[in-house]
Image 1: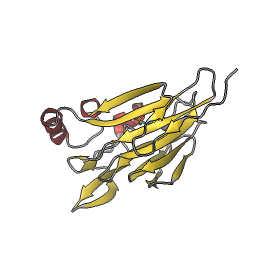
Image 2 (image 1 turned 90 degrees about the horizontal axis):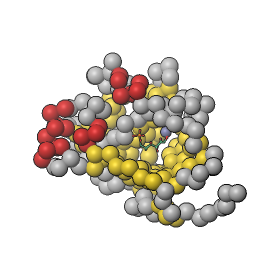
Image 3 (image 1 turned 60 degrees about the vertical axis):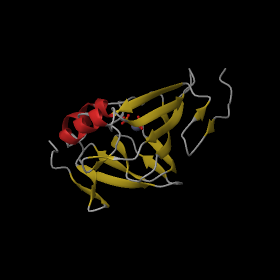
Image 4 (image 1 turned 30 degrees about the vertical axis):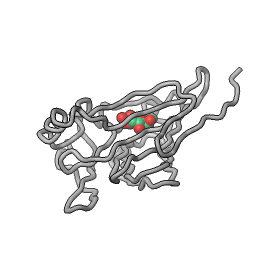
Length: 187
Ligand code: F6R
Ligand code: ZN
């Protein structure tokens, strides 16, 4: 029998206790998602392949749902803000929530038929991600962006479509301001 449990989440650091798993994404693993490949390679070599984000999770064998935190560093590659890979869920009938704890960013969403939506990520905002909407988080602030996510263990990830053709919108810093613009490389 699964037993209830209190999980302590630090909204500033994103730490989870108890934590059952984690992974780190460095810039060199995200070569396909940023537009400015020259700026990317320069950062990889000059800044020692920086960490862009980390994902920590709490998952119990036999449970139907799991949750965790994503901790995103601030920064840009060229003019593009640091972002996650972005994905659809394998299970088209399963959505998710992203509950922002600290920092500021943008949640970029895209429906299967090509509609783009944005939900701002500010502390206290719990974003509802409906089933079959691709989602990517972007840190547009100058501090860490930390959010809690929760979804069904069966949801899974489908990275293929977004990796191959990108998303229709990109989020950039232009003239010192954040801007959501059409992706010139959208295939
Ligand atoms: C799970 C989910 C998040 C992301 C995480 C990293 O369905 O949406 O846990 O997996 O924020 O983003 P990706 O997986 O797009 O690199
Ligand atoms: Zn997801």
